[in-house]
Length: 117
Image (cartoon, rainbow, N blue to C red; front, side):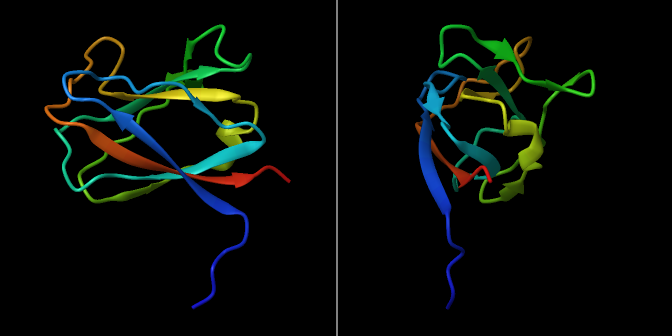
């Protein structure tokens, strides 16, 4: 079996009783997808983004709308990496900023990243 070179997984957890992960530094890598955990309380995924290493957090928008992915437990969600090229760090949210969804257990997600060429 051949492995794809340069692809890494960064673990991020949304802890029980919360809807927002801690800061994840992407550095010189772009987000290509998320591997969802086997357990997930029904909610979409949205993101906060930072272009200055975490000093400022902004809602992630593209084409005038919040970047929002419909997800379910046990799925792999592919992203357009072009959206993430200038993002230095992210926080992953269960739900939206207006309607966050607290997870009922710790939820470990896998951020699939690859170096920016």
